[in-house]
Length: 620
Image (tube, rainbow, N blue to C red):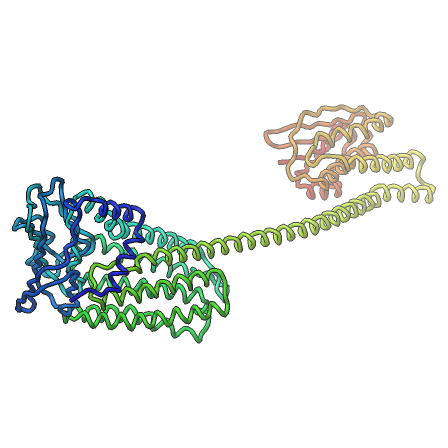
């Protein structure tokens, strides 16, 4: 039952690659004195009990339980004798790279340590981490000594016993044990943490980043999801190396760990599936089913293997799974060679290395007689995870750059559209100004036609008839001139400013009143602007006042004309009062005054009797 030499060589090569600390430790051991040098225990006897049958035979470590007993559960007691030339002067310890599942250690019939309950099946598993057992002083003696290790092995749990090293604590603990523990236990912690970080980054990107499908609908980026799932599965798988006493029984826990291993492989293949662009090709969509079959088959065969106590079922399924994964990776590598890019080349390299390490682990851990070997896939997963993280971040960066480019292009289009709108608005504004000037000209011409033009026409008719006196003709021409001046003044009047309008009317009409022998009285207080009285309304009010004064000049025979304006509460009140002969308001009511006041929303009141006529306007 000699161990596989190739496996031993690979094991020692792995130990050499563990780091400078291990190398220096090895040098320290070789330099120790013969009496204090570590002793590697390989040979002894073993007593096994499997299915009620007890056998005792010589043994040469390492001892792979599943290979020796086809995975059947049982117990074993190893007697490992060694001889010391002198009683040790320094503390000693025992280093066991791997032993399990549960066991106890005795030295010279003294119990040193117990790991787990030897009477319980499928309970704890202490074969996941290296063991160091300190040796109490004076327990070792000069001459013959006997180290006894009794273990209880469960089905398909990689139980057994590796070579054992006994020696000074300074060499055994500080160099051999610490180095092995760093690679197996601390390494598992770091690998789990790394996978959680990578998975967390990928999951955050999957939750926050959206892509657009062929139909223009937003969707999450699948490659981020599979990256996150793969790393989370692997983190759980690495956590198994830290849990000596799992929360579930070995049957359920073993199936769960196998499912996590298969889930990592399947999610990684789906990541590659999307990276290669196969998800967009109908002819490659069938690949998703065998990938799902990897997980389903692993769960079924691991459960079958544990139920029947026959690890060979699971070993055979792992071979089938390995062949499929290798074919998948090979197809991806060939596709990468045909259409290479940086992401695909990196992933193809990582995938090929991982498949090669997985094949090595299957041959060494599942088939060879060597025991105590560490799986290499756990270390290649770092390279795989780093490549996966790099690709995810590169994809995110490319998407961010594209998004920034899209935003910049959109901003440029918006700016262009704004410039076009500004140009269009400027054209419309210019057209509006031209139209406003045209309307203003038309208004002035219309008002001149209706006002000044009508007065001049009246003057012409008076001259043609020969019946009008020179005084009547002069008044008509003066009305025409005053109205023209008021029209010019109306252009500059602010909307709603009644006070300014009254001041302009006084300026234009007071000289005429004086020339007509009429005394003008001004009783105008400050008034508030009238809301809603725009430029057109201001002109209507101006003409209304002008017509009231013109009527006084033509018909009233008055000697006094009075302007009154003020506020009555919130109402603006305007009054034109004369002391002329008056008229009968029931029979004569100036029609134009009523029309103009109605047009501007003012209330018109006319009172007249001999000696007093009042025209009143009110605005709310």
